[in-house]
Image 1 (cartoon, rainbow over the protein chains, first blue to last red):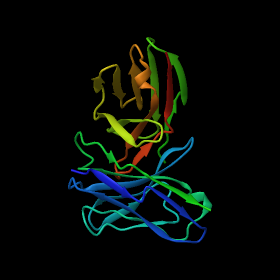
Image 2 (cartoon, helix red, strand yellow):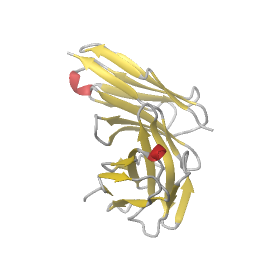
Image 3 (cartoon, chains in turn orange, purple):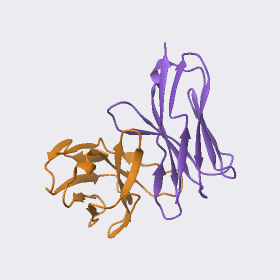
Amino acid sequence: NAGVTQTPKFQVLKTGQSMTLQCAQDMNHEYMSWYRQDPGMGLRLIHYSVGAGITDQGEVPNGYNVSRSTTEDFPLRLLSAAPSQTSVYFCASSRQLDGTDTQYFGPGTRLTVL
Amino acid sequence: ELKVEQNPLFLSMQEGKNYTIYCNYSTTSDRLYWYRQDPGKSLESLFVLLSNGAVKQEGRLMASLDTKARLSTLHITAAVHDLSATYFCAVALRDDKIIFGKGTRLHILP
C-alpha cells in the first residue's frame, strides 16, 4: 500500500492563480481531511469528508473548495491564491472515526504564494 | 467552538528526566489523539484514547484521558534525545471534525 499520497510536494503560485492539490489513499478509508500548518498555529482543519459524495467545512474553509467523487481521491482547490494561503498542506485519511482508528497523514505539500 | 490548548508550547529538558505535556479541551468529546511530528516531516500517530480513564503506553510515552476534566496528558519517562519532536493532541467532535492543539515542541538535551 502506498498509504496517503499528495502531489505536488512543492508549488509556487502567483497571487490570483488557481490550482488543485491532489490527495489519494489506497486503504479504502471513508474519512478524509485537509489541514494547513502554519508556524505556531498547529494544524487547522480546512475541509473534511466522511465518504464519497459528502464534504463539510472545517475551521478555515474560505478560499478553498473540495469534492469527493470517489473513495480514493480528495482534491483541494485554491480558487484564487493569496499570500495568506502560503502554508504546508496535509491530507489525512481514516477508516472511520469510531473505534480505535487514527488518521494517517500524507507527506504534505509546501505552497508558496507570491 | 472547540478550543484545544496544549501546554507547555515549548519544553527543553535533560535526558533522563520525566515530564508531562497537558492537553485541555473545551467541549465534550470521547476521542482524543496524540501525534508526533519531526522537523520537516509529516505526522505520525502515537495514541488513540477513547474513553474516560483510558491509559495507553508505548516505550517511554504514556497517555491518559480524563473526559470529565476534559484533560489528556502525555507523560515522558526518562527522556532520551530521540524523543525530541513536536507533539500534538487532537480532539474529535460529534460532527466528525478533528481539531488540533498548537503543539508542544520538545527539545531533549543530551
